[in-house]
Structures are given as C-alpha cells and as structure tokens.
Image 1: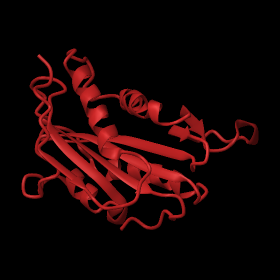
Image 2: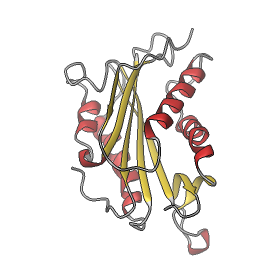
Image 3: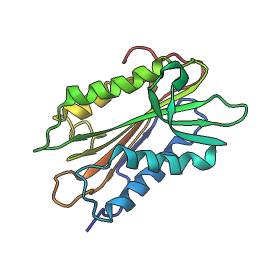
Image 4: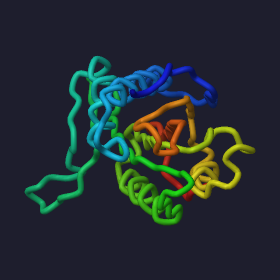
Length: 206
C-alpha cells in the first residue's frame, strides 16, 4: 500500500537571501516521491536519479535552461566531473545543485562516517566553482524517527552529522511521515538545503 498522507511534521526556514523558493521546491519534490512510493516500488530506497527527476520537474519552470549532469568543465579539456543539476536564466548567476540521499534506521547498515564523506565530496565540488554562482547542496533521507526532532533522533549518527554540517549555510529543512516500502522500519522522510549565494565562498564545515 504506499505512502500515507503527507502531513508536514517539522519545518524550519532560516533567514538568508535566496533567489529560489526553496520550500516550494522541496515540497514539490517530496510530493513527487510520495507519489512514486504509492506505486509500491521495488527498490530499497529512492534512487538518486529519482530525486534528480523530482527536483528537475520542480525547478524547470523557474529557469530558462535546466541541464542534468552538467560538466564542471569542458570534456574537451579532459574534465569528467559532473553536477547533478545546473540552471541558468538571463541576468542571473548560474545555479549549481548537488544532492545526495541518506538513511538511518535500526537494522540498516547506516555507516554515518561513510555517508558524511559522500556529502563532503559533493560540497567540495561546489567549493571549486566561481564564487559568482549560486550553489546548493540538497540532502534527502529516510529515517526510523523524525530527524528534525533532537530528542527522537539523538541516537542517529546520520542525523547528528546533519546537524553539524555547514550550519551557517543551512537555509531549509523539513520532515514528514513517509513510507517508501511497507515494513522496512523507515517511517519519516527528511530534506535539507544548504545554499552559498553568489559572492559567498564555500568555507569549512561549520
């Protein structure tokens, strides 16, 4: 039977200038993932490609061009590093979006340090971009507790890593009851967005 009603449990918006309606984009992405979950998926977790498609659909009307897996530099120069999504509109800084999925649940192989390393790898790619660009990192995860409620998720190493991750640039977080597959022990979805606007350097993780 798939996901239940997508009732928002926790949502936090930190004050910071941004050119994208981040809460609306995240809400649209979560709604799309809930729709996919209702089809009784065969995968253990939402694939990153599914997350990319959901975010692409949400931001496509907002920009003149949206490109998936955009190269950070020209293939002619031997560059093979790609960004998950890139967007551009006249008279606006280019937008680079990297994202990762995460998970934490009893009985799951969580490996919090390994997951953290993947997030750091994506942010490091954003770090090397021209400072005059709009850079986002989006994290989407499934949990056996509400990852935004400190007490409920105190024993989750993944949730604790998220709380300490580039805190100065976290601009939005949300969580909702969610079921990807019945009986997998994961009953909540969380989403986080970090933003480095044009002119802001990507500094240390603090």
